[in-house]
Image (cartoon, rainbow, N blue to C red):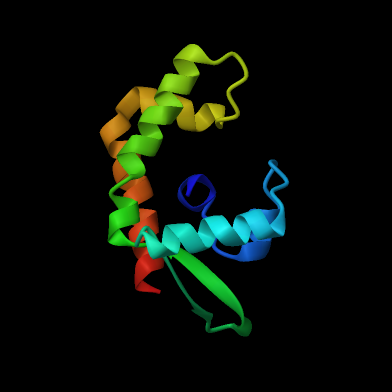
Length: 112
């Protein structure tokens, strides 16, 4: 979810390229679990019928404020925070506006 919200990743390959170097079977399981919970959905990529696009559902988009709160907590309590410093500054300057911008980006992806 983090990569979908903050980095606009939508394809399996993009998730695999994350810094965590997650194993394909673990990633497949996690995506399947999020889909079964109704947090994400998948559809065939219209540009490449062999690929799938993952998107947040409305239920998943409703979790964005919680993810932003985790970033805020981490910026206060963790020395080695991996969050983008520009994002942290935007959150500190106007958290509601930042949350709305993320929600809007993710809602756009739902409609594609």
